[in-house]
Every structure is written in C-alpha cells, then in structure tokens.
Image 1 (tube, one colour):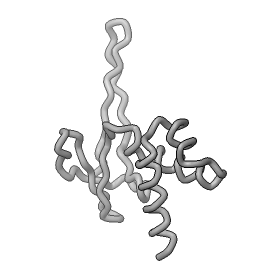
Image 2 (tube, rainbow, N blue to C red):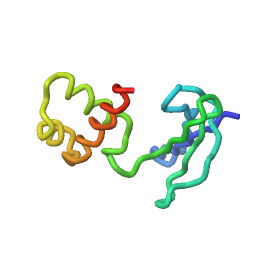
Image 3 (tube, rainbow, N blue to C red):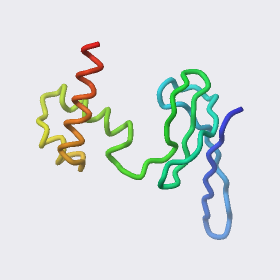
Length: 108
C-alpha cells in the first residue's frame, strides 16, 4: 500500500489537490506504512523493505536529511565547523554531532 501525501492549493476560489507518494528516505522505496506519531504530533512512517522509520515532516531545519548531507559535503570541501554553522543556520553542536556520527559509521 502506497502512502499518499495530499496538498491542497487554493488559487482564486479553485481548490486543486496535488498528491505525491511518500518514499523511504533511506532506500527510496514506495512501500511505506504509518508508524505512529512523534511527541510533537508529526507522523512517522516505516519502510517495508529496509525496516527503517522516518518522519514525513521535520519541525527543525537541522533535523532534515538534506541539511545533514550538506554538512557532510561542506566539511569534505574544507569548510570549518563555524562556517558550516553560519551558512546553514544550524548550531555548531549540531554540525559536530553529524560529523561524529559520520566518523563512527566510517570506522566500522
């Protein structure tokens, strides 16, 4: 069963519903199921293929997978921690934790 994310776009009295299929952010698979809610109310999904869970929406900009990928790319290009923090508008401790997690993954 494919989960559908619905958006309502209101344009001069006309309502257009746009549907996008929710995909797993880890393996890009379409077969995801609802897996409860976070404490703040955002829904969680679980991938049937890889078994990992993820949120469909993020409250914090720093928690988005795209931001974490940018942190890794910028550090590989020689940007410092404070520089990354300033450019991406995230705390320097967030940058450090992402890089530490990357280090532990690369060491294993």
